[in-house]
Structure formats: structure tokens, C-alpha cells
Amino acid sequence: MALQVIGAGLPRTGTSSLKQALAMLLGGRVLHMSSIRRHPFDLGADWRTALAGGDPDWRQLLAPYVAAVDWPASHFWRPLSSAFPESLVLLSLRDSAK
Image (cartoon, rainbow, N blue to C red; front, side):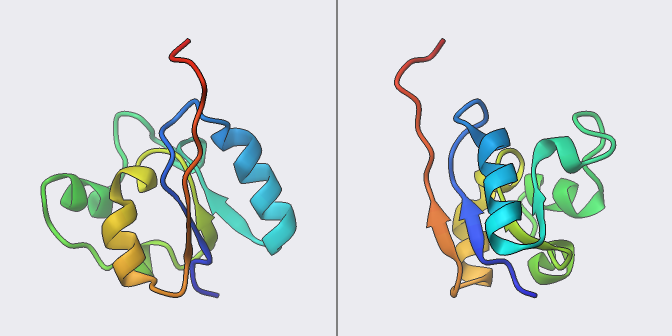
């Protein structure tokens, strides 16, 4: 199943709740920073490639997921939306910086 929703919101904008809601609504796994076993020190080779300006195989990296929210995926919402043009991009905001 291809990625259906790409979260473009920054961390602390309700992404944990969004993760739970999308998992229920879409019936699959949702990538969130809490899903990455070695976060924040080791995101894995593909994320390191992306952070270094490279172009990982997004479809392979996100194959187990129906949606991706929070860091690091939210940082790459533009290339993800190109790799998954059928996906919705969802921007979550918050009223304050606190």
C-alpha cells in the first residue's frame, strides 16, 4: 500500500494524536519520530542520505506505512509529495510556541 498522507507539520503540532487517528482511519502503520527505533541519534541510512541532500528510494523507505507525520518525514514533505503524487499533504499548526 502506498503512502496516502504526508504530514507537513512540525513536531509538537499534535502529530502523536494525528498518528493515532490516521492509523485508525487508514488501517495501517504511520511513521512518526517515535517509530524510529534509534531516534534521535541514528535515523538510518536512508534518512542520513536525505539529510545530506541525497535522494533515497522514498517508496522503499516508506513501503510499510500508509502515512508519515512528524520529524523526519515532515522536513521532506516536498520530495515525498513528488514521490507519492497521489498522497494528501496535511499541514498541522499550533497557536503558540509554548
